[in-house]
Image (cartoon, rainbow, N blue to C red; front, side, top):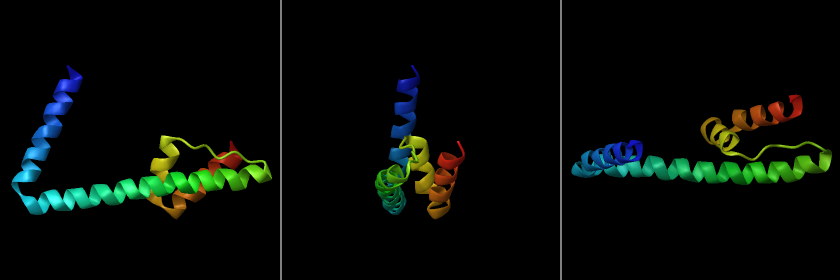
Length: 87
């Protein structure tokens, strides 16, 4: 039931966006930038994990840390590193 309701809501939003092409292209551009930033954050986490692994630290690679870095950028990297050192 929740899946059907969620699917209907997504289709309704897409229908509204498709009616106005400018809104659709703006939303698609923002989503593509976000997905690129998310992929880049996982690459940064992987490289950070390799580098910190040589020093004996473990940096977690999960969706929460990836989203944190994708949204915050460099302060997100600093907070993930600080949490991995302190915890």
